[in-house]
Image: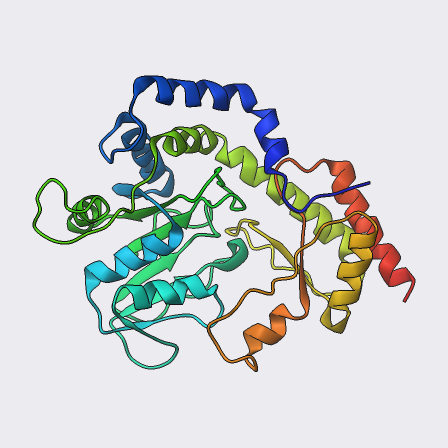
Length: 319
């Protein structure tokens, strides 16, 4: 059996008619790019309601979303997390601020990795990097939340896309202008950080079934938790308010051997080897060198999940 880690082609085929209908509607309308177009506004309204805030702005990427959030606040320093992808940090630098891992700052960022809610920094203003936590962050009280719709995310799309959510009207209005070069007012310099209309239309379709998507991922996670509980490895937390962007197992120094064994037996997993913005000796780096991400997405069949479990059991049985 072959089990892919990520199957956007399968998801597309399951909903192909609906996606093609949406694509045809947008292409036929001639509304292709524009922050005030129907498709954009409909998605933004629906997404704000889903998160539980007043405003949502569709933007070009999660990195851009963080950059604009920081740029609006104009801080000199931003307290950033150790455990996050480097984009969280580079976005702060692009906004003209200095990222710090320790010390005092008025603005801080928390990154909710793999769908797990992490503690907020003790700063006056908080930006939540929720790119991997859609469904986990609801009715937030923080200044802003940023979300990614990169293809591999829970609410993944066929290209780069993201959103910012907030209850701050002035910030919302500023982002709407900044992302479109301040075209209407010409009062400042901005950039091109818009969300495309076709993508917005498809996001709205996928958002309508987001709860089913999250429930299916939870079911798969519970299958893994039950099936792997007696093995000498560490399983992820299954707290009530988390979602499963990833299912991460900690297997210590056997990580690479398990990865190779599963690959040889048709199971595609992920070794997280991307660059962290911190020293190689850090606990985050050590942790990632011992962990493996198992397939978990809404188009996986039960038999595929059970096959992954059995192959992991066979690996440990041969040690």
